[in-house]
Image (cartoon, rainbow, N blue to C red; front, top):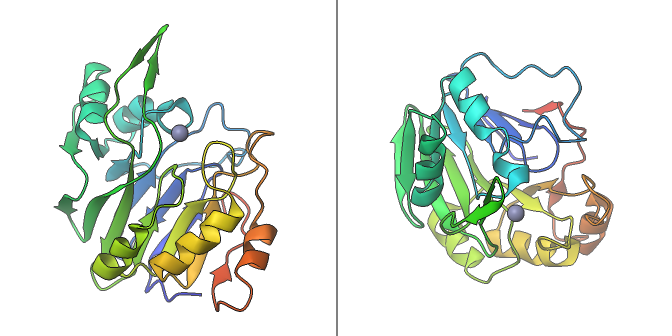
Amino acid sequence: MADLKGTSVTWLGHATVLIATAKGTQILIDPFIEQNPKFPKGYQLPEKIDLLLLTHGHFDHVADAATVARKHNATVVAIYELVAWLQSKGVKDGVGMNIGGSYRQGDVTITLTEARHSSGIQDGDKVIYGGEPAGFVIAVDNGPVLYHSGDTSLFSDMQLIRELHHPDVAMLPIGDHFTMGPKAAAVATRYLGAKTVLPIHFGTFPPLTGTPETLEKELSGAGVEVLHTSPGKAIS
Ligand SMILES: [Zn+2]
């Protein structure tokens, strides 16, 4: 297990992850709460969420974003078009970015990374252009470097993320069907050089068939720890 130096990471089912730094900065990624069958029952989010990071515009990543941003006074960080859409839904505090750029707040530096996916936003009976899908590198001062890939296939430029950021922990989708599955996620882990992987985006719905056990088999002998965690249990 990578040394998280006081930072805790809590998977909340699907692609939803809560990160708390040693200094107390609360970061929530892709909140999927109301319709998420894996969201831990009765789990209370912290009263104040400093940063709300959104990887792309699909409902299972942004359905609860506007509500959470308003209720928890969060600054939303995402690709430009997605932030603009949320602002049209009453979100006040947004930082619109683009791929390759970084944003600093408190003790964290957030970098928007490439992802191979789509990002249309279902808004009523229309699908709106949501900008490019993305992932995030979250570098905590005197703490770990965390990478949440968002929904993506494997892409060889993950090697650039390794070269630029050296992630300690990679949060990668393994469910298959809408993202890569375990076999590709094992190659992704190698490209990223991460020694700890938190599998996400699996088991939520029947088509998402990849499992942490399969990822572990694919990575056997690679010296990588695959975290088996139930939603709501903090890793620190
Ligand atoms: Zn998606």
